[in-house]
Every structure is written in C-alpha cells, then in structure tokens.
Amino acid sequence: MTDPRLVTLGLSCTFLAYVVLVRDRRGPPPAPALEATIPTGIELTVFHAGAIKTYRFGRRILVGRAPSADLRLDDARVSRLHARIEMRDDGVYVEDLGSRNGTTVEGEAVRAPRLLAVDDEVTVGTAALVFRGVGAWR
Amino acid sequence: MSPLLARLRACVPMVLALVVAAATLRLAPSGALPAWLPFALGALALAWPILRPANVTRDDTLPALAVVLSAIGLAVVARLEPSLAQRQVVWLAFSLVLAVAAGPAFERFRVLAAYKYIWILGSIVLFVALALFGQEVNGARLWIRLGPVQFEPVEIIKLFVVLFMASYLTETADVIARTKPWSLRANAKYLGPLFLGWGISMGILVFERDLGMATLLLGTFVAMLYVATRRIDLVVGASGVFALAALWAATHYSYVERRIAVWRDPFHDPLGAGYQAVQSLFSIANGGLFGTGYGLGRPDYIPSVATDYVYAAYGEEWGTIGSIVLLAIFLAVVLRALRVANRQPDLYAKLLATGLAAVFGFQIVIIVGGVLRLFPLTGITLPFVSYGGSSLVTNFLLVALLWAISSERRIPAR
Image (cartoon, rainbow over all chains, first blue to last red):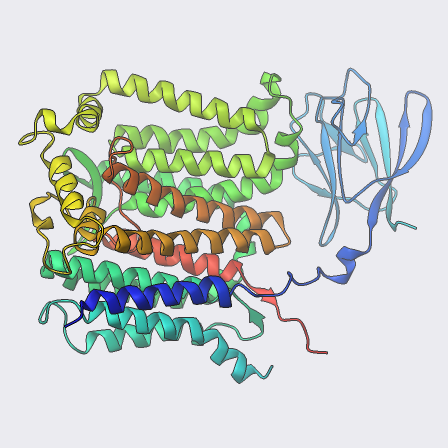
C-alpha cells in the first residue's frame, strides 16, 4: 500500500505549480485612469526676494529651505520642509508640515489640509505663492 | 468574458485547493472530525470566491492558499489532540464566515486611510482591557476570557499596527524620505508620531512578556518604513535600538535570560529548562528526510506542541520534504502579496499590502527559526497551522484584506 501522505504532498505540489506557473500569467497591470496619464502640474506664481516668477510643477510640491525641496526658498523664516501643495482627487490642497512660522492662505493659518481656489495666496515665510490652477504639460 | 464565466474562473483555485484540503483531511484519524465536516467547511470556503464582485479581477489564489494551509493545520492538530481539533473547526468556520462577511467592507478599504488614529486608539483600548481583565498563563498575561471563548488581543493589534503605519506613511513618506538623517529635529517631527504609536505597543508587549509579537511588530515596522522612504539609516538605527533593548532585557529579565541560555545549549538541562527544545530537536531528527508517517511519530513528548512547536510535530511526521512543501506554500502567499503591492497604483494600497506581507512573512520566520534553533524561540503561532482561534481569525482577515486590495478593473474586451 502506498503512503497516503504521497497523495497529499503530490497534490500540494501540483497546486503550488498551478499557483506559480498558471495563475501568474496575468497581463500587465491595468492602465491608470486617463486623467492620470496626461502629465498635469500645479502652476504657482512665486513672489520672493523681489522677484516674481511663474512655475509649473508636478502633482506634488514640497516647499522649504532644504536642498531636497521641490520649491526651494532661501529664507530664514522658512522651515527646511515647510509646506506641501498636492493634487488630490477633488482639487489642490495645501498642508503645513509643522513649520516654525506657519503657513497661511489668504491670511488664515493652515492647520488642516486646505483646498485652494484659483488665485488664492499662500504665504510661506516672506514668500507669497499664488495658485494659478492646474495645467497640462505641452 | 461573460460574468458567469468570470465567476466560474474565480472559483477554479478554490476548487483545486479544496481537493488538496480533502486529501489532507482524509488522513485524520477517524472519529477526530465528524464526517460531514469537510463538506460544510468546503461550502463555506467556496462561498468566498463566489460572493466576490465579478466586475474586477482579483488574485484568487490567495484565499485558496489560506484554505490549503488551514487544512494542513487542522490535520496536524487533529492528530495531536482531537479535542483541540474540534475547537479549531469551530474557529475555522467562524473565521470563514467572518472573512466572507467582511468582503463588502474590505472592498472599500481605501476609506480606511482617513482614520489612522483609530487603529492606535483601538490598540490602546485592547491593551488596557488586557491589563484589567487579562488572564495569566505561563507567566504571561495575554488572554482575555469572554464567556467560553479565550481571545488573544495582540493578534488583532498586529493588523491595527499595519493599518496605522500604512495611512501615516502615505501622508508623510515623501517628507521623511527627504529629511537628512542628521537633522534631529525634523526626524523627531515627522517620525515622532510613528515611534510613539509603535513604541507604546512595543513597551506594553515587553511588559506583557510577549517577545515574539514585539519582534514581529519591529520587523514589520522597519520593513514598511524602508519600503516607503528607502532610508537605510532608519533600518540600521532601529536594528541598533533593538539590539540594545534585547541586550538590556537579557541581563535584566530572568525569563529572557533563560530563553537565551536554552537556545545556546538546550542539552545543558535536558530534563528541566531545555526539555521542550530538546524534545523538539529529537522530533525533527526522528523525522529525517521522509518523516515517520502521519500519526506514526511521537510529537506528544513536546510540551505545547499544538501551538508554538507545531512545526516540529509536522516536521517529524512529514519529514524535511513535507516541511519544504509547507514553507513553499507560505512563500507563495508572501510572494503573491508582494505582487499585489507591486501592481496597485496608489501608495496606500502598496504600503498596506507590503505591511500585510511583512507581518505574515516575519511571523513564519520568527517561529520556524525559533523551533529550528536559528535564534532564541519566542512563542508565536505558525499562521493557519498552529492551534489558536485568534490567530486563525486574524490570518483569515489578513488574507481577505489582501485579496480585496488585489482588485483590478477588468480591462474591457476589444
């Protein structure tokens, strides 16, 4: 009589082979939603140290004094990583990252993530960032 | 593909898993389990893929692998102690019902990202309940008794920790990643809440003398942190802190000291402190390459064999070959889970799947490595295989959540 364990082990190995070899052939992951494939970015006009410049960033901007920040502001009143402006499903939000001097939108301090309207002015240290909207990269 | 065909296709892995499960449970001594039982459990398990939404594709092998593992566990426990097996069956049925019932809620798992501090609050409430109503077993206060049911809250807390970490890191990973290692204030600011939440659970676990769970949470914590931020200095730092804490515990707590002494030389006191470890080594050695055969070994010499040392009992009767197959099934679960993480578009789903894979994988490494004496044994369960209701329920929920995360939109046929 054969060892009954052989049946179990054989079946287990077959099942594993099925899991690894047969079921593994799922195609590539589905394409992301159309709006995510169009490169879009947040547009900001930056008023800082006497200069006015308009930039188009990506979907997420880290503002701060650190060299690794996306928008680097060389300003003693700006924390290293000061604030974050990011695109979410329902709009563009600004969030303070626990900075020393705080972030304001239209003069109001930002405590929780706040939805930005077009032409809202965000102040970070002595800099003013005006939100211009979201545009597609051309 | 028509919806009916899609539904049938979703059931294929589960049907195959049930064949393996039936072949495994057929070995169990007659009388240990009622004859109708495999059919009832099989029907419950089959309801799992049938009741899932048909408009998405999912990794349907995940629940199937869980069913195979729990069948192996049931067969081992039935052979060790039939009375425990009957309780395990009730827990198994309960876990399956819970996993099926939680399906619709888990489908909208992304909502959970917004409620991160609920998980920390929930863990603290469970710990307080444990301190107030907990029962002491073998010098550790780990169980709460609710009527006839004993419940181990730490098992659920490990899921809570993963859920908290995933939401917190989704928000802060980019900031932590760009903080320089030497910038103390910034690190304290962004990592602070994380270390606070995790440190509290860690402290209580050490206080409760649950070293296995403490190690497990540390491993998961570091893995998720690294995957989210790619900062190797955090891994080095956390490992250093853990090494120091372990050293301190080894010199200040007698129960830790004893564990390490047993690990270094179990034969120093083979009839006393080292008895369990020595018997487990004898069991594994007795099994050899091919094993003694189901029901033909003597794993009953090992104390608490159905929980902590279940791997030694399995290794004796199924041999090295059986153990490799078992570990391969565990490996398949972890790899599938990491694949789920890889295929999801958003950071929250990625981190959640990675965390669940880490908590599942590290648990196996910690208990199997402990039984094989690669490092000191810390008692936790071998997922799905060990006897233990809370562990079974938690692991079924873990797999159900992973399975929900694996949902992908069906690509419309062209």
